[in-house]
Image (tube, rainbow, N blue to C red; front, side, top):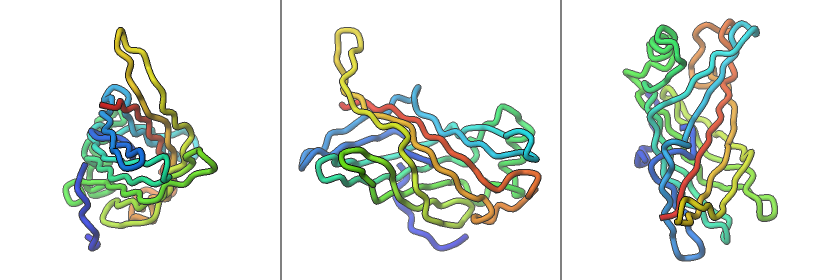
Amino acid sequence: MNSRPRPRCAFLALAGAGFAVAASATAASFDVDTDHRTIYFAVAHRDISFVRGRFLKLDATVTFDPEAKTGSVVANVDASSVDTGNRTIDDVLRSPQFLDTAQFPEVRYVGDRFVFEAERLTAIDGMLWLHGVQHPLRLTVQRFVCQDVQAGIAKRYVCGGTFRTAFDRSQYGLTRSLPDVGDQVELEINIEATRR
């Protein structure tokens, strides 16, 4: 395994048990809605169809200062929680042929640069650790919204959105079954979080 920093476990990203927003010097904590927190992936199969799935176990901590336009993300995924709905495929993905979850149990993303266009968050730049290899990875913000939401008699302040990215698995040493199983992995991350 390559030498790498070990940030506190808290993928693919912006999903997990903690979501914090810092407005000026005052930090507000957000709790992630576990019913609205997903990481989906898709990989082409023989250029005919796609293998699609998700990861069931993930955690993250996020800080975001909209005034300073800064933030950070530390996200961790349990690689063995991969779920395609097909037990045989899941076992192959966990095996040494692909993710090798016994040797590399975690997929980690650390983002340290939030990219804005005017007042709109458009991307997060960071580093992805996968299969013992690390490479830079940008999450593109498809949608990001913060607003008051009425929940019964209570009003809650909720932030969330959709984030997408893609990378070549061969960069991370995952070359098994190329080209029948596509090289490019597409990710979609969805999250909602409520201010405490």
